[in-house]
Image (cartoon, rainbow over all chains, first blue to last red):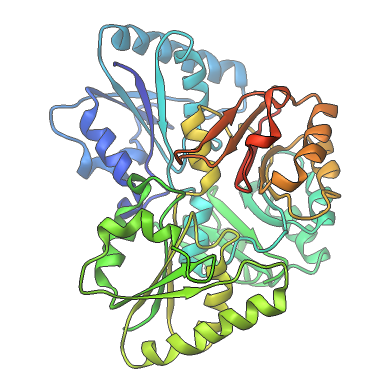
Length: 231
Length: 231
């Protein structure tokens, strides 16, 4: 049956695609490619391109990355309104997404609009922090310690409570808050229980093992800090 | 160079293996198979078996699942002492592990012993909660909400603070604590913002969308509850 398929392509290395994702790419009629900038390239396409058959129609659409939720949802609703008639006409549409479609992904918003009218299926992908952990030899979490995935896009007010609990942490999008995050982690004795990764897996990758060593000028927006208090 | 490779095979569906995991299985000389019970079968082997070449030597070893940490670490140290000379003699050993090797996995302990003497590499796998989220159409997390992965093997004392923060939750190994977890989630108005999955992806899978519907007699040890307060 025709549907929307959300396909996680993992964080960057094409070898981290799953067999299920590759199979789905071969079954779709249309590939919806998200771009973060108007007229820009799709990063997910760069990962999956070798597995997309030539006959698949590609439509590239801009999904605005903005803190203005109304604007963002409006743009995504327009894209949903465009693809719903295609699915109702019998086409299966694939939407490729970095990492995992269900974790902090634009796909979640698109899915909510489309599933009101059409069938939707989702294929999980390797999450960026899982790939960073394996690639840097960092154990995310053991035993009965909780693991917290924390997007550092708010005021960090919840981070103190999480640190007090003794959680292992995955701090995402750290860039703008780096100094504040660093101070909190050092105050909790965690300066050397970290991996700091910027542009992980890309040619301009930067890795540090201690917060004290970090030169903030080398960090990009896509900076992740993994913290294991038992490490 | 000879080494230990930790290979995540995902939570159960062989199609959720990555290309990288399959490639690694073709490069190893020896496959170390963990079993949870002495003389039992390896669940990870059942997932990966179709991708393991015939010429690979298989050695099955019992990794005890016990709350006695000293006993567990002793057993794992013995296995490490057995495989380190094999690696030093030039063999590459693969250790397959359910889900992701860096998240609540026995592999983490084995790695710590082996990396003192030999090279170690790790290949991430699809985490069980990511597969449950995609398979049940449940968005794990959006926006700036933290996601907490919580093993319900302790006294749940940290769960109240995490709920107060408004986190999205992945509650693992819920079985023995089901009634306590249920009471806390209902008190926080989350009875219907959940997916409850027992034996996910297996023939005896049980799924519920509301805590009120759950018959605890149907739940196994491998029960996961996903909670999205915005769902």
